[in-house]
Length: 280
Image 1: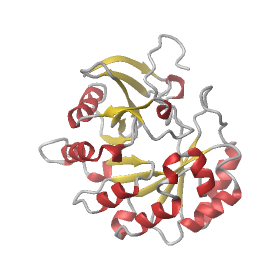
Image 2: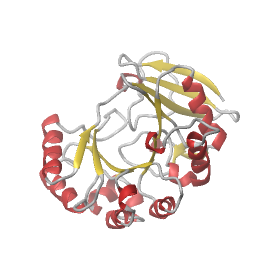
Image 3: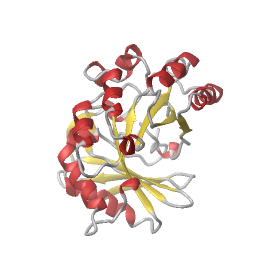
Image 4: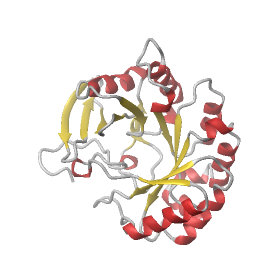
C-alpha cells in the first residue's frame, strides 16, 4: 500500500488517498485535536449499503480489506502524527460486513504486541447489522460501537438507509438493550441532521422514547451537503433544539463539529477522488 495523494484542510485535517497492491483506491483521514489525533480508517473498497446521504455508498462495494490493509492505513498515517491517538473504523465501507478482518485488526490495535490501545480508544461504526452486533456482544473485547440511525421512524430510515428494511429500528434497539450495562454505555447512536427529514421536534421526541432507559449517547452530525447529495443540512437552530429535547429527556447528546470539509474528508464524503484543485 502506498499514499497516492494527500490533501490538507485549513483546520489541520488530512485526507489520504491510498493505492492498494491490486490498484484499488481507498481513503483514510487524520483528524488532529489539541489532546490527541483521530485516525479514521476504511474497512472496504467502497460500500454496498447505499445510504442516500453518503457519497461512499454511490460507489457500490468492490471488496473487503484484509487485516494488513487496515493496519497499514494506521501505520502510514502515524508518519504524520506523534501525538496520542484513537482509531475509528468510520471510513469507507461497513466494518461489520467484514467482521473477521475487522476483529483481527482490533485485536492488533489493542494487544500488548500490537499498538497497545485501550478499547476505549477504538471505535467501530455500523449502519445496524443486527446479527453482527449480537456477535460482537459475545466477544471478549468490545470496542466503542457507533450505530448510524439518522431516521428515527422506519418510514424515514427505509428511504435513507436500505439496510433498515432488513433490520428495522426496533430490532436494532432490541439488540442494544440486551447488552450488559457496561457495554451499553459504549454505544453511540449517530443521527445525520437533514433539513426537513430528520430534524423535527417530533423526531427528537420519538428518539427520546426509543432510547428511554438505555445508557447510550447520541451524536448529531450536520449533513455534509454536496452537489451529488439531494439533501440540505439542517439549520443550526433546529440541531440545537433537537439536542435540547434529548438532553432534557436524559440522553447525553453531542453535536459533531465538521472537520475537513474543504478537502472532502468529512463524514460521508469519501469517494476515491483524485484532484489537483477544488475537491468538490
